[in-house]
Image (cartoon, rainbow over all chains, first blue to last red; front, side):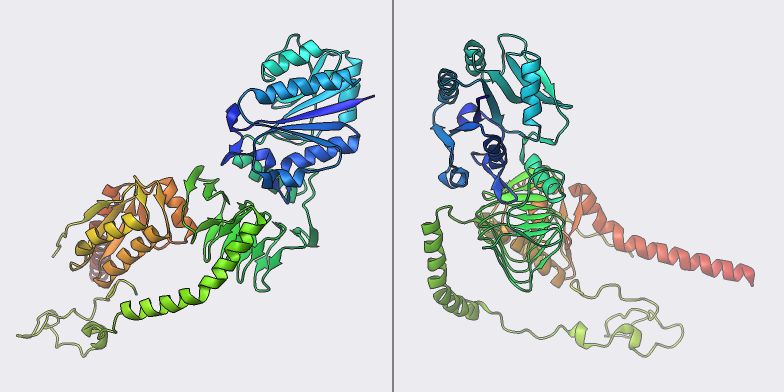
Amino acid sequence: MDVKAILIVTGPAEGSREMLADVPLSLLPALGRPVISHTLDRLLSFGAEVTAIIEAAPAAYLRPLQRPGLKWIQTGKSGSLWNAAESCFNEYAQNGADLVLVFRLGAYAEFDLERLLQFHLEQRQRVTRLEDPNGPLDMFLISASRRNDGAYMFRHKLAAFRTACGRFRFTGYVNRLADVHDLRRLATDSLQLKTAIVPAGAQIKPGVWIEESARIHRSARILAPAFVGAHSKVRAAAVLTRGAVIEHHAEIDCGTVVENASVLPYTYVGAGLDLSHAVAGFRRLLHLERNVTVEIDDPKLLGRAPAAAPLRVLAAAAALAGYVPGQFYRGLLSRRSRESLTESPAAIKSPPAASQVPAPPGRENVAAEGEDPKFSANFAIARRYGNQ
Amino acid sequence: METSRPVIVKRLPNHFNLREAKRFLREVMPILRIDRPQVVFDLSQVRQIDSAGVDVLLRCMAEAMKRDGDVKLAAVSPQAAAVLELTRTERLFEIYYTSTDAARSFSGFLPNAMRQAAREAAALEESSAGAA
């Protein structure tokens, strides 16, 4: 049986909400590989010919998806994506395909493809829609001979159908990837081996996966479960714990703690920070517990490395070249602005009231003439200076 | 004897970045240079805060504490709270839900504690006298 597949990844032109900084969530990595690549690999291993139709996305996020047997269509303006999907469906039908899988991503779902085909054929459906206990998904199996049904669906952006479609209900793992919370949940579920996604790289100790080209300082601590992606850097005294996920080309500077958080690709996290319960990337901090997004335009806290390798090399060279002059000028400026040491306040020099010789009975609170009044000995000095 | 000194409540700007932080510091520095300053910063409007903003908050607290005063934060917006948590500075400040609570805390904390201690001492004396 000839089975083909069309993967549709909608973007900002289609008003998709499953995005982060104009990059569809399914193109962002979960444990080293883009979410869409897990779906792609399953379809390709099944022997299906796959066409991926994607709205314009940065090349850096599309490059890891290149595979033999995968056809790419990139569209720009609104509407052309669904036209491309319809013409692709028609082309498959003309070339003798029997069944066409149409997935709008989004969602990551683990289901038995053979059982789906069997269900579709046994029920003699024109269109079968996948659904999990939480409701239907934008995943369909369409008989290629039903071109009108397919055309109708594409013209209505998979939201309306000519005839009632069959429902294939499955109970496998589903993550709808509706927002960044779901992306983080997918990463943690995969680290806890609840999904079929295997983290990229080698498992150096139970629950800790590190890709080969990652650079980790020997004084950094990594506690399971955790993942460190390719070309990422974890600097001295950094701590990764409780499901920390550092995606490729990310950098964690000295002394920073990453706890139950994901750092997206090409993100720099500054020194001495405490990144917890959050997703950091694209100069944004998405705090998952507070459910808030903060835009941070400060390279001391969150920075962004260029996605293109030559630009990254240039930026690193410029930083290296500017280091020595920068230190020189910093030294000059700090000397000018350095405050001279002041005399210690008199209160520090004077002995505490409790250690002084007590006044005669009945004269505790009476100050001698010309002297400052003193506290009686039974008063403890709760706070002499604020910074103590 | 109880004395009440004024508590100054200052609202931080929407974008508390380097430029705004410098301007803000110039404004509040005279307030912080009085004896035992009591200052509340209202962060309810803050939508963006960077390392310069956090630095200014810490500097204000240091200045206030040098003079035996204090700086407290109130109505911290979720965005500001996230950045304070990221920079590990939220644990250095007393944080209140509202500016009123923060202002009230200045008059309430130390005298009340002392009053309580005095009451306990008096009660103890009375009980010991009664027993004798």
